[in-house]
Image (cartoon, rainbow, N blue to C red; front, side, top):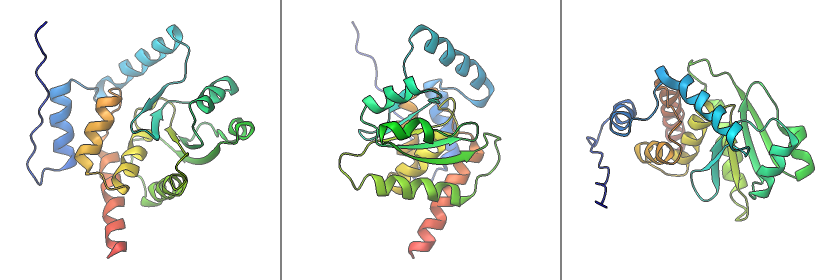
Length: 202
């Protein structure tokens, strides 16, 4: 068997996140907004064939995925060791499902409307996760309905707030969860949040 060539992505030192995303998508064939619904249908089919929680571990302590919806799925989440959840769904609050398992939930309801998101939305999530991870046993699950847009942008903000370069964070998230689609307006919203964080630190 011939070894497969490794993927090399070259970007200019000051390339924007948008250009980085476009280059990465072209090279990896990852979903774009135009075929998002096809990807969502694929996820639905996969769930029917393999009934399990839709979770992808991006780091050892931060997972990204789709909706929980019921007690059986919440029990599955609890068995993975998750102690904290950021629920980005505007459609559903996980809090009542999580209470019997002692899981702390931040319901951060967000509409997946491809509109700019305010910095406060990201600040709530980042503060919640950074406080949670002070406990070495804590593990966080960030999710929306499909784990494609809203939860992905929140996870991107979290990783960057932890010190990741945006390009590295985007590449890692998309490599580990290829169904993710970083809409330009959402990436720009994260960039604006991070810029304000830097200004506040100064």
